[in-house]
Length: 55
Image 1 (tube, rainbow, N blue to C red):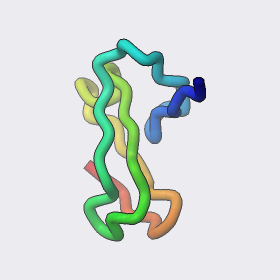
Image 2: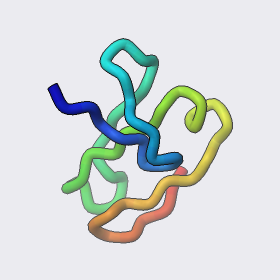
Image 3: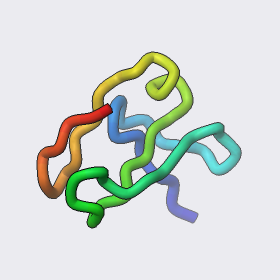
């Protein structure tokens, strides 16, 4: 089983972690994963395809 990576901090996301995944709000082609800590702290992420920066 492959583990996904947080788009903010780069840490591997474990299967039972309270993380979130969603399509890039700009291009919709890339799935963005964010760990619970980065979501709560409001850290920025960057889409690897279109360079969109969120949140």
